[in-house]
Image 1: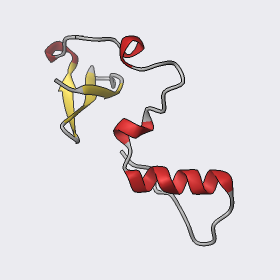
Image 2 (image 1 turned 180 degrees about the vertical axis):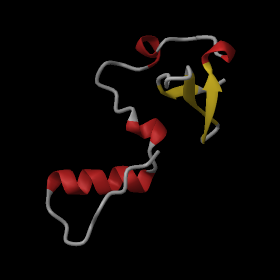
Image 3 (image 1 turned 135 degrees about the vertical axis):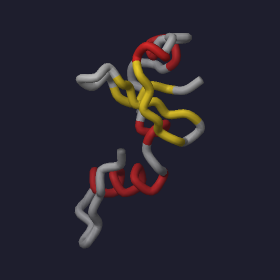
Image 4 (image 1 turned 45 degrees about the vertical axis):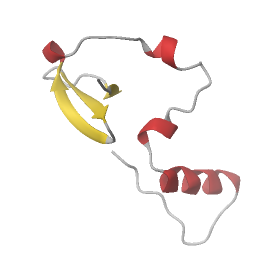
Length: 76
């Protein structure tokens, strides 16, 4: 069981997060158990699941004010 992180690429592969590890899985090997609409409310911050605590903290700080020397590297 896992959570779909990214939709299909040109080969039909999805990026799925299973136990804090992201794996590539072909669409033929996936079965939908519960849709995202049922799991998460509309205003839910999905970054809580896929991004690290440090990334979210930096993003919040930069959203509030300019912090000299602080940069965010996009996580995959």
